[in-house]
Length: 139
Image 1 (cartoon, rainbow, N blue to C red):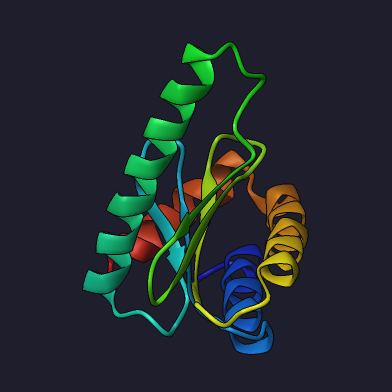
Image 2 (cartoon, rainbow, N blue to C red):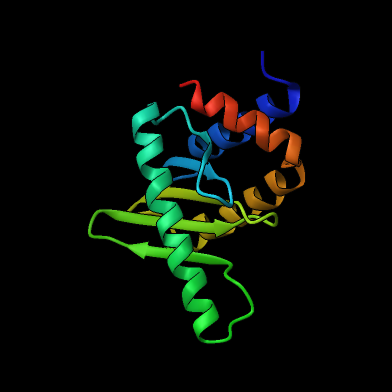
C-alpha cells in the first residue's frame, strides 16, 4: 500500500493533467532516468517510453549546458507538428515531462508546469523517490 506522500504525489500529477488546458500526459523521471510516476492517461508501457525520451532530452540538455558554460538546465521545450513536450528540472535532479496539444497556451502550460515542479519538489525525498520507483515498476 502506498504512503500518503506517494498518493499525494500521484494525485498532483493526475490533477495537473486533468485541470491544465491542453495537457494530455505527465511523467516524473528520476535523475538516473527511472520512471517515478505517470499520469493515469498513460499505460505502463507508454509511461516507460515517455520516460526514456525525457531522460534522453535531459541528458542532451545537460551536455549542451556544460558545453556553453551554462548555469544549469531549467526547461526544454520541443515543438512538434501536433504538440509540445515540456521537460522541467526538479531540484533534486529529477525531472517532469509534460505532453500538451499544439493549440495549448504555451505560456500557461509552462507556468503551470513550474508551479507543479515547485510543489512536487518539496515532496520528493529520497524515501519517497524509492517508494515511487517501486510503485512505478510494479505496473
